[in-house]
Length: 338
Image (tube, rainbow, N blue to C red; front, side):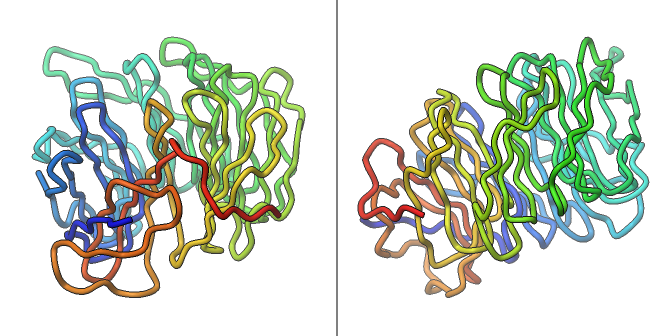
């Protein structure tokens, strides 16, 4: 099946984000943000040098504004708010160094950011000017926070860290209270995702494992060892319909797991590494942020053999850094069990 490559980034794509109006935002290691339109497969907006180093996370606010976090070396100001056309609206003060992750609450009233020094900040839109302000600062981790995630009902907030632990907070009106510290991973925690019914919290780690926890009491429900190899599990995500769990890592595979019994359903073997993934609201597509090991020709579109059941389009630069859409409407074939 043909795929279309959209050129723009000149560095590894670190994060990818979907918007309900048919836009895909992505951030790169070179500090750029690009917004593509799915319908036209074209760049709609771009911002370069957003951060001195790289863009590590993105989230959309209810008004269409975009929050970006990243690295300016080890100085502050690693968190910025942009208009829908990527004009800088606000630089948020509070983090003392790099900001690794950012996420919006389901209600859209708050967002949380995590980064260096084990600091998480919760922000709320306050005042007539509509600017976002700090409402709470938490420093319960001893290492960088690499992942932050709200539960679908907005009542829980989880953070994962370099210190190998997960902190689970109860959340109410911008106030987070530490409820449990989850221990069991033997390396840094890279990614977190709540199940749609909020009864499970899934974590991916550099120790190659995926673990599923009961948020009610902090107990470990399931551990999938060797889920990915070579620097572990970089991304995990439950589908919005609650039927599957998707994981990816630097072993050049993306895996589909049954969300109920954690049985491996399919393995997509790729020619590139996947660093981050997300799933569309209808649960029909997976969008992955990747880095190819080869380089496509320097043209706007090209035809390549796509993996079975991958479809629509991918975005790429001439150095091969891209986002790719994967269809979940067909049964992948062939598949490999592990």
